[in-house]
Image (tube, rainbow, N blue to C red; front, side, top):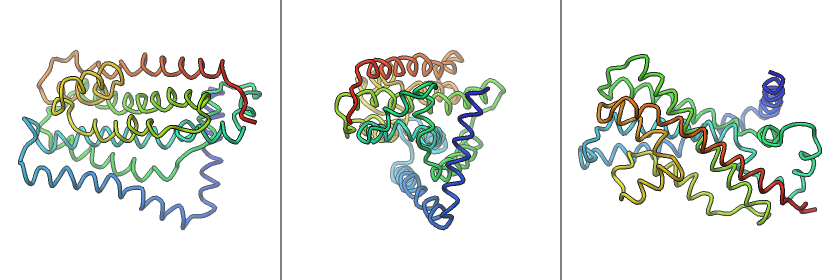
Length: 259
């Protein structure tokens, strides 16, 4: 409980700081929804031209799209400290975190918040509700739980990728653009069911970097294409996140101050 209180106190501080420039904050809220809206327009025009994507309907694709963008927006909002981790290393601010008597993961989370991403979260939630109502799914308590797990596990997967690649900054000092292949690229890739891609791609992004377990496998269960056990696949995000945290602390052990 003390950890949560500390975390939400930092969130409140960042909220008050953002509200000092309300016009700028409001403008950023509007700008942040342009990217998902443009991607959503691409999905719509795709179906206008082709009618269907393999055997997936437009509402089913939108459900996959909404879960991915909701997960990414949540991870981007609350995991900003890891997304910009190279700045902490380059400025020497990570040294200050290391001497504080708190968990390094928590302190890094508290170092920065992208609060203007809340507009993305709101848009994704609206789209998620719309898609869920029109995807032809007979909802039960278990299926609603699976839907919640999909969004939460997706958030953990994106956070895990950022945490793991943050460990590279202990060696490179600067962040690597290759990370965007697995974050922004992973967001775009997992916005569609993985079975539309080649099998090696599908396997890699299911077993190694588990974007598939956050939406594709449980989505197959929701629409009646797979057994109920597929609904538990989002739980794979927990050991994945644990492994990423282990990689981060391995990097901490070999950290040398940048000055």
